[in-house]
Image (cartoon, rainbow, N blue to C red; front, top):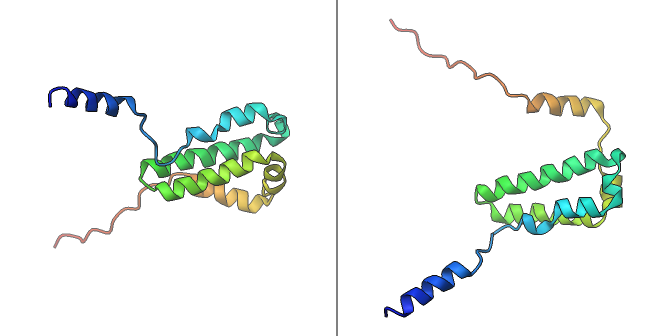
Length: 119
């Protein structure tokens, strides 16, 4: 028994932990560096969007939403694999929509609660 316990501990410590959602395995930054289309300044918004999606996957994984994280990473990998399609599909130019999204992102002050007045 004394021999088995250290061997089991060594095996557990030596085996790499597998993440439920492999965000780093997507190689987003490596793909951006490798694909000329994504390095062009005209496509900076597409790159920001890809990074935002990756960051959202990290948040999903942190909150234990592994299936959603994996789905989002599959989308990111698909967009990175075909940057021309991502660039073609990306970029909604509706300014009203962009302004409403920007307003929605701004933190709002807390709404004061209506406490009953003391009598």
